[in-house]
Image 1 (cartoon, rainbow, N blue to C red):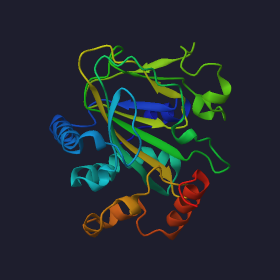
Image 2: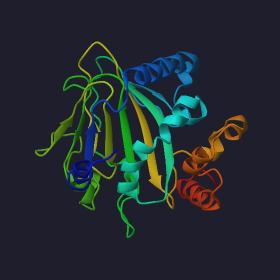
Image 3: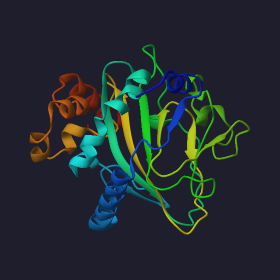
Length: 258
């Protein structure tokens, strides 16, 4: 379970690495399942979210296997999310991202959803499940410690968000490590200089009063919704009128709805 030291790192640095959080058997089940989905979905993989050059993506995984729905409600994980976001949280998205071998693309420093803390505090928190080792040469994540409290986005504060930052550090670790990040933290992926893909599962949460990155109620099939446990329905915000309203307002502002 979360320790005071873990919470201190989240508060001060903006992220914490949890080696061995995902046991080898579960990691293999996740990896096998996402590879099956990549094969089955083909060129449409990730279409519920967005494509990304140099990467394979999957989206809407809460709809695609009970395995992913079980992971998103692990109480030993949610303790970290509550620490960052407070008592009322929901799943924002559940995706997979695999950086292709020999991908030279540098991901600009960014905050997830271009989110800035508001008067009620932080409202996005991500967990990144390492399905392969994260090393300095296969697409490790760089981050700038403490920037979750800066009140700025890197696109506004930096001349070149793709450039090396003087304070950047690397998040590396063995497969099975889970990274918990205050998603307001400036971060970005580095090139994969190896001949193997680097795969990760992203379980991303938001505060209850903010829009989801992907509208879970709209995306989940009726048969999936019918099979949800009470806890899963709560974390997915399936029965929340407030969630419906904030997602609709966000879609209208984004131009997805007229």
